[in-house]
Image (cartoon, rainbow, N blue to C red; front, side):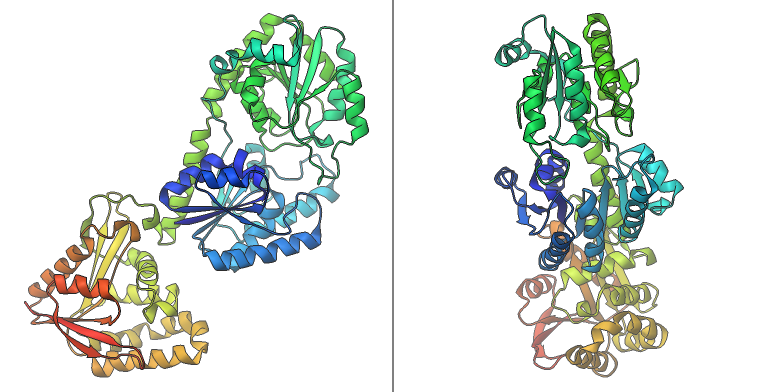
Length: 580
């Protein structure tokens, strides 16, 4: 399996998605696509290949967005991923559309938070909802982090209800827990110059006005002696509401301490007494979850996302948006009451353990991949090699057989006609009386290999042309516009109806992860058992003369007397025969 995660910047890949990337890498290759940045080296050290996306920006830049969409098209056509997982508002829009048009089998989008809130003006909400509704038509699944967004998307039909899945959000509960963070409390407070009896109020977030920093700075002036406010987070100059130097200078003059970007936030949470997040817009705020998991009471604005983290009066307090007075009052209420801080911090940690486990989020993402891949006949990509049972094929296996054929017999002519043609072919073969299709299934009954044979090759071809040829021809029609494909199709039909005679092993494929375990030979042996039961006196197989692994397998299974032949002009093949 090859999975591409698309974000705006590499910071999201590193700090928001790394556990998902790492888990998906257990089943194959994972690629992060974003604007390049300082976190690429660490991603690649962890086995996540990064592909830079020119034009990817966080700000409003239509021309750059078009450039990024074109660049993504080229990346997807070159990399040919099996899953494209999009994130963030802008990549989520163009990524879903480009991914589907580029032929990516599975397109998944995570809604980290609709970029418009229900109380925004209609002129702001309508374009966002329309773009999301358009892009969702190109995805297979919409993983929605926030339940309020999920209800809204269902009510307004922004996405099909069958695509919507509540994902939730989570953090590393081992890293962020009261016992771990408390170990560094005294040392960190000394480093920050905070007196033992001072109330340290902390906030973590990008330095943009939307996070509520202006209100926090005004509230800080009202707190009085005995309180210290610390801000942790990087500049975000691409955003139009990035804090300017004058605002930051005034805040510093008021006593606010700016620590910049930090990777040791768990130590800082241990030093805080109160965590604040006066944001104007959130999806499901990670910093607030980290603080809650660390045992801190949280003061946040009464908005979507913050409401999912804070239970008012139990794990923290909620205040109106844009109200520095209410913010200062809530901070003071907690700061002046150590017992209230302690009880709310304990309740916050308990809520985090129950609801904010990052592992549950990762498991749901992986389960989504597994389910959608299986629906599309690609479930074998996430099947763990083990014991396999050989059973007769069923009509519902046709999609999987088509995908295994296309990917396992890439150089074969039938693969060039596309998976929809192959699906029609296998549907017919699974019901044709002259055919025997056997599959190897894992413990979850996921098909991981198959073999198909017939007692009457010429008769099979004729019946297929009569009974399913039109439908299959329509499925392959776009590919048959090329003269070389049309010629090879004619040669194939002529071989099947005029030159082929008697029983034949038609096709066999085994999922990549299951190769080298004797499964191919077991399938051949099972087909030979069927041939004996049918009283067939021989069976042949035609294989490309340069396909040495297949030739070796068939020779090992008892197919001998190789005879040169040619089904398609200019292509050398061998015919091998087995006799009971």
